[in-house]
Length: 233
Image (cartoon, rainbow, N blue to C red; front, side, top):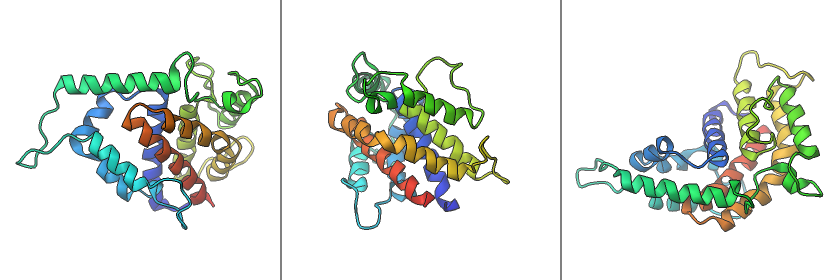
């Protein structure tokens, strides 16, 4: 994998893992609004259009829509005005409600668990959950102790992908209990798990999102995952 591409993938995986596991909090949203962080995404390798334009949407247009919806307007002096707490609170509530409807309510529209998408009975803690748990244990990661989410939550799977990607840059890189390098293990995990179900999940999230935030970040997340797999090749 190209070392110059690693930072954007690491930042992207960390960001998407966080907003899938929980709605954005003030410490994440305030810098986005005040520091025009969306604009930086244009140059990130993880959001590049693949050769031949095979993707179903334009990532640059999605970034433009996020920039228009979630960037505070600049003042005449070019410095950004202070963000009023009331405005921030309203945005946080809007995102919290959208996350609840999409990912964490009693009947989420885009259930973020692999078992729900891949098991015949569509229930949590199925065979895929156990397989994902074993993949974590192969790297001495035990998530059972937390007890907060099934191991096959998309946010946790992306956090595991981030863990493996960070290990790629170690010298020498560690190996799993089965002797796999982090890069090989990441390719296997993407094929066997994340990319086997994240497409329908994230497409459903984007189609049902009530906010620009989740409507546009869902397809960007999927693009990142597909680009990451291409990078590994």
